[in-house]
Image 1 (cartoon, one colour):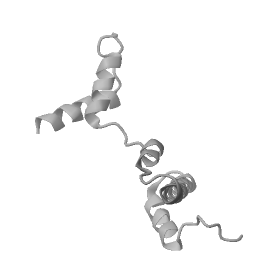
Image 2: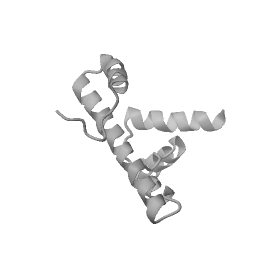
Image 3: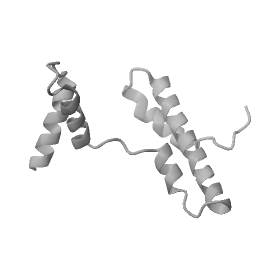
Length: 107
């Protein structure tokens, strides 16, 4: 197999392999990391191209394609808004999210 321009370095693959040691599905874990890494490399290449040819700031593309996950506080509020008054019982994970957010805000 010939090397593709977006091929992770052997050291990085070895690191993923070692990190996935305890994973139930090691192959899936490594493949997911490789896909994410490749997508990040492609995004950075596209941003460089845009900055060079069209846009002085490609931050909006990067933000749109790699949005930050909602904060713990935002997730807790969303759970309360969705389920707080509906009479539906929250799962243990949902309760833990709210508990963590409340503990974090009191600290």
